[in-house]
Length: 137
Image (cartoon, rainbow, N blue to C red):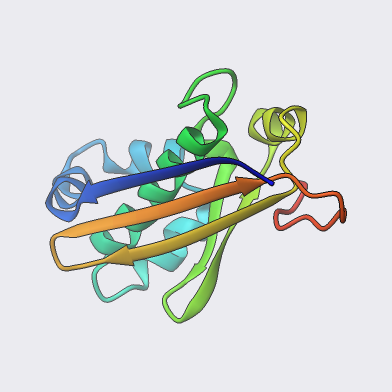
């Protein structure tokens, strides 16, 4: 059963400006995991990779119906995969607690980007089969 859907778009140029700012390192540390930063920086266009992952974090918050509140923050949502690998979302901390309290058992995510825009779609689902598509950390 689908519990919620979320979609978000990020202008790549906005992320480029953030990455060039003097406070970029603080932003990256607050929003992305070290693994996400490493994967994105190895990308031919890091701003596209960061934009797609940020869009996925926003889309998940929308799909949960919380936005970035009620303990759900970008720092406890990790987007894995992408760039020729199937993307997946891993939750931890209060985002995981909130997802469990809402009965979420599966999270589906799709990422896409053009040179100017990145987007993500997230579907959160409850299932009686007990399969989880996110890792508990």
